[in-house]
Amino acid sequence: MKFHGYARPDGTVGIRNKLLIIAVDECCEGIARNIAKKFEDAVVLTNWYTCMLGGNEETFNQMIAVGKNPNVAGALVIAMGCGSILPQQVADEVAKTGKPVDTLVCQEVGGTRKSISVGIEKMNAIKAYADGLEKEEFPLSRIVVGVKCGGSDTSSGIASNPSVGEAVDKLVGMGAIAIGGELFELQGCQHVLNQRASSPEVAQKINKLIDNERIRWSVEGTDVETMSIGNSVGGLTTIEEKSMGALHKTGSCEIVDILQINKDFIDIPKEPGFYLSEVTMLCGGAGVNFASLGAHVILWTSGAAGFNNSIVPVIRVSGNKDLINDDIDVDATGIMDGIESVDEVSDKIIAKIAEVANGSHTQLEGIGDSTLTLYQKDQRLEQVLKLNCVR
Amino acid sequence: MNRFVIMDEKDMVATALVDCKKGEMADVHDNKNVHLLSVLALEDIRYGNKIALNDIAKGERVIKYGAVIGECTHGIKKGELVHVHNVKSLTVDIPPAFKAEIMRQMNIKAREEE
Image (cartoon, rainbow over all chains, first blue to last red; front, side):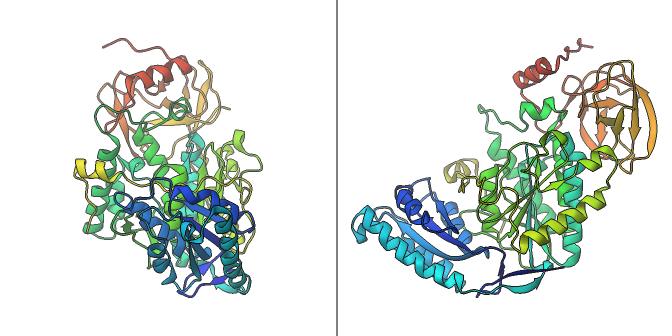
């Protein structure tokens, strides 16, 4: 299978030509949004934590990594000018891909209105570069796919997750890369994951990172919602049951490695295969996490909420009849009725990925974009709990 | 027909794909859609919920997807609903207040202490 995409100077392939505006502090977001209004393909990624670098290194790393995502054609990095994150620090790293990157410090330009007009000029140059790119043909094996679930219900475990899992196995068989995450929701599945790990070291790493996530979210004196009440009223009894159902969407291939996202580094998958990762179970943040890892599309089994990520298009797969409307990209309800097989639905999913890679919009692309949430682990809490990454 | 499915041959519970009423038969299929057996439902089993395929003793591990999904906290009879009132997690259990709310919404009565 083939698709037409954009060859990037660093050797990656993009399926979209997004013009990214990175607001390195929350104060300049209004300026960023006003610049973005003038460009159909502009996307704003805002660091809404604080303008300080200390404690926000994971967010800082993600801003760079999102800039490097192959669906991004070029980037403008903006700062108000009084914070401690300099746009140049982000821009220099993104520029290593060879893509056009520019910066704007609002206080240096002098005034909000002037910053907007200077920003629009800078973006025009990036747009001219993006518009000049011609699409080329690539095999579908060049695609990096994220898999995620949200609003899990009974049909997720029986229809959408197994069919996405089968699609993942087929994609990996073609030589593509697929990435799962949501480690908190894999508690109780370690024995299965360890059997799939490519080496005892990878198995240990998986166990350690799942354990970190358990400790991080189970601080005494605070409640943790492993499952929503809605999950349970829908029939899910324990986190293990939810986890095993969720695990199905990762297929059955070997787990090459587990990709870490932290204050010191972000792992990018290089070799084909299936990877686990530290992509959060929190939906908006997961979209940006996947963008940081270089994903082109996300397969999203659902479940309730319907939304898209403006950089990494979301393909929604559902087996719940009550949810089938024009938000859903792949209908898996035939599995529930016993009239369609998991294998057949997995073929529909792969065909949909090829279409979307070729430029077709997903059902929600451009109309139902979620916030590009820069989720990060709280560095102070990590320190208190003595949680470390695996080196 | 009341369609139920199991996901693995080792499963001790089947999932309802319809609303099954007390006194009706639950028709259990495997994930290739082959009819395996039928079990008399001893209570209402709503869509998405699980029915016990055999008696399950207190303390026994409950299997679904071929894996342990929790521990039985109150003896379950073949044909009864398997849910938060008689199975608990072995890793992170649902907080009691949440369980009470789930049972209230589903009209499940708490089991007497054994």
